[in-house]
Length: 431
Ligand code: UGA
Image (cartoon, rainbow, N blue to C red):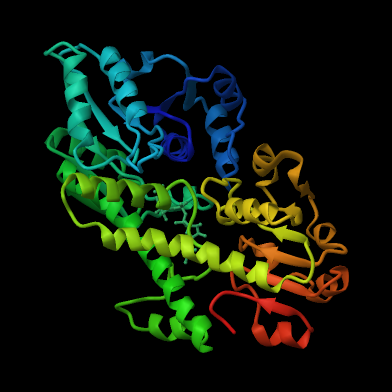
């Protein structure tokens, strides 16, 4: 098939590369010439394991092409919209990008009688948006143009985006057009996972429900960790035991410094905003957000009340491991607050240093070596659970630090080990 993907962020580029790898011809549209030129050279612009290799492979095979114009739309059977829907000040999803590209797509649709185009939205959009997209397209294209809209939400996670796409738990296809559903089912044939065919509104809501549920699980784990800290109970033992109940499960229940990233915070806020418009009491979801912010504040309080000096190292800045993304990362809040309290900070992260440097510039120090970061420091703060921190040489850490203090926001180490090694060790929900 010939496809066009509008947008080359995590969702757009991964979708384009995976479908190109299956043998389709894929055109990717962007609006920044410099970025498009980099992509043409095989630079994915973001750090995502395996993405560079799959991009370069398909560039070489001439199955993926990067464009600034929309001319490929008229040749395509499917056009995916995969542009950002960032949060507005009031939490609502900003749909201006989606509507803008819908208009451009409409103006470039094939007018041939025998050509049918599916316009499928992969961007996360509130219920009802695909109907609006349909209206925009109808308003900007002659009546005889054959097209249908479909909602095809994306469930990939940053850091494991390619394997998540290939081994999806489910593929959701929402449309009112049988033909569009058939075409999308055909395209997704090589992808593992149950295919759920449904209406537009259900498809749109499935995406928000999934992210709201994931956010709720994290906040629930953090909520219980507050009880553990007041009572001496151990959060990991509590959750391990509770998680053995198959109805509950243990996955996505790691307590810590809260959820960040470009999706969970934004999508929970957007669902709250949609709920308010529909006159639904959204206090449940507001509590999820509140607990997330309490988790960060509690961790900060631990540092402020127990530090043994103000010269600290931080390991881990990305909002989660295996990405360089720092959008809504808990590290940003913690760094900002520590700076307000006159701490001197030296930070280390495998991938996210440059992005953090753009924000904090020379207010903090940056190092490419985790051991260098902790040398002669009054303590270490861990904010992202990169694998390299799990099995560090703790004896070396102990000897490099001036004060053996660790604030671990991801519960990476055993309390007994840390005690034996003589650390003052503060983690989450464990005494
Ligand atoms: C999330 C969803 O997991 C994907 O299914 C979805 O497609 C994506 O949003 C999206 O809407 O595009 P992502 O934001 O990449 O994916 O990352 P997650 O793995 O969900 O982690 C989100 C945040 O929750 C991270 O800050 C992570 O550290 C935190 N988290 C996660 C916890 O604090 N505890 C956990 O147990 C799990």
